[in-house]
Image (cartoon, rainbow, N blue to C red):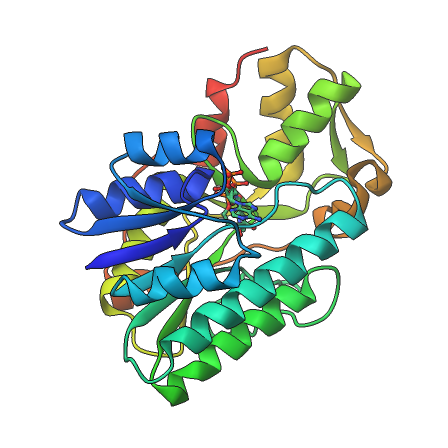
Length: 293
Ligand SMILES: NC(=O)c1ccc[n+]([C@@H]2O[C@H](COP(=O)([O-])OP(=O)(O)OC[C@H]3O[C@@H](n4cnc5c(N)ncnc54)[C@H](OP(=O)(O)O)[C@@H]3O)[C@@H](O)[C@H]2O)c1
C-alpha cells in the first residue's frame, strides 16, 4: 500500500514509517520544514511539503495514496491555550482527511488515547472521554469512526499515557523534562496512580496491522504495560538523573496536572487476541534505564 502519513518525524511516526517500509509498503509523508523533509527522506519516505493547516495539501496526500495514518499533533504543551490550538488544528485536519476518503473504502488510522475507568483497567469496549481537557480529541475521533457508514475504513489506535523509545517520550518524558528543569524528580499526589505504557516500536506494529486489516469503525489499544505506579516511574528518572524523588503539586504540570493525578491503567487483551499483536520491546521501567543525566 502507498500510505500518506502525518507526524512521520515524531516518536511514534518515525517508528511507523520504518515498520511500513519493512513490510512492503511505501510512504508519502507530510513535511512542514526542510529539517523534517530531510529526516523523512533519510528514513526512506517520499515527502509532501505542508503543514496540518494546509487542507488542500492534505487532500492531495489522500488523492495520491491508498490509505492514511494520522499522527501529527503540536508539541507545545506549555499552556491550556497552546493545547487547545493543537486540538483544533488536529480536528480540522482529521475532518478534512476523513471527508476526502468518503466512498473510497480506503483505510485511515488515527491516533487516540486509552480511556480511564475508575478502579479497573480500561478496555477497547470503553468509550473515549468526550469532555475534560482533551475531550475534543475524543469527539474528533468518534466523528472519524462514524465515517465507517460512509465508505471509509476508519479505525483508531489508542495510545497509553507513555509511548517511549530510548527512555524518552510521552507522559514519562514530560516528567523527565520537568525533573531536569526543577532539579527534583516529582510526581503528583501519592504516586500510587498507575499509567499504562508501550514502546514506540511495538505501537508501530499495531498501526500497520490496523491499516492492513482493521474493520471499519473499530478501536484498538496499544498497551504493553497495563499500569506502572507514577512513583516508580519518578524513582527511575530520579536515580538516572541523580535527583531527589518527591511528591509535588499537580499545578507543576500545567494543563496536564489533573490528568497526571489520575489512576488510569489500560488493557490490550482484545487487541492482542483479534489482531495478533504481541509487544516484544522493553517495558517503560526498563527503557527509562537509558536516560543520561
Ligand atoms: N508519545 C506518547 O506518549 C503519546 C501518548 C498518547 C498519545 N500520543 C499521540 O500520538 C501522536 C504522535 O505522538 P508523538 O509522541 O510521536 O509526537 P511527537 O514526537 O511530539 O511528534 C509530533 C509530530 O507531529 C508533527 N507536527 C506537529 N504539528 C504539526 C503541524 N502543525 N503540521 C505538520 N506536522 C506537525 C511534528 O512534525 P515536525 O517534526 O515538523 O515538528 C512531528 O512529526 C500525537 O497525536 C500524540 O498526541 C502520543
